[in-house]
Each structure stands twice: as structure tokens, then as C-alpha cells.
Image (cartoon, rainbow, N blue to C red):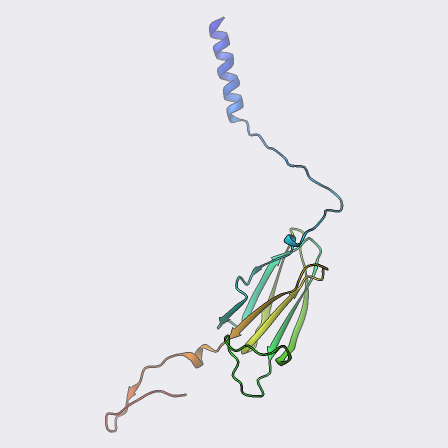
Length: 166
């Protein structure tokens, strides 16, 4: 009798030890209530940065089926004020270059790739929902070939060291 009870307990413990338990949370079907936290831009991570890349990758999260508008603005530097990240242009100095829309997918994510122009670019992401503010990103696109530091060279005549100037 004791051996049977012990064997039964060992079998029950073995069965329960290998079984996997899944705990499901309550799932609401139908019209789910969305909050402001459901609208998020994942990349770019910083709001102001510089890059030598020609494109900016934008991705984020929004409820499935949401129409997101991505606008790209460039600057007009006709006054030769030489805008940079320390001295940003006024809102009137930006020109709308491209406006595209993207729809979030079934999992609630969206992504878009925008071509940048050289100089200061402003990317505005509009979720089109009341109560959710637009996200703005400033990207300074610079040309790598113009910013390379080149070592000076010696001329054959006179042994004078001359810097390479473009």
C-alpha cells in the first residue's frame, strides 16, 4: 500500500512538473479605448541631432489603422546666416519639401524613410488625433567630403608645407 501511494505521488509530481501553465489576461474585444501613450515615435531617439546619412528612418507605434502624416521641411538660407544646431532658423525660414502619409499595420507599428536635404531639416510627425501633439525632430545633414580633415603636404619648390584647401 505504501509503495503504491509513493509511486502515485511520484507520477503526479512528474506530470505536474512537465506541464506548462498559461495564464491569460482579460481581453477586451470591440472598441478598445486608446490613450496618448499608444502614440509613440521610437526612432529617431533624439529630437535634435546631426547626421551624414542621406535618409532618416522614422518608425513608431500607433493603434492599428491609424493614418500618420510625415512632413519634411528644409531651410532657406538666402540671408547667409549660416544656420546650425546652435542657431536654428525661425519657423518662417522652413519650406515644406515633402509630405507623405503612412498607415500603421496590424501589430500597431509604422515606418517611413525620408530623403534629407543638405542643411537643417525639420521632420514633423502628425498622428491626426485630437489630444496627441505633433512630434518634431531637427536633423542637420552635413556633407562628409566637405568636413574631412586632410593633412598638409610639402611642395617640391622650397619645402613649404601647404594645407590642402578645396
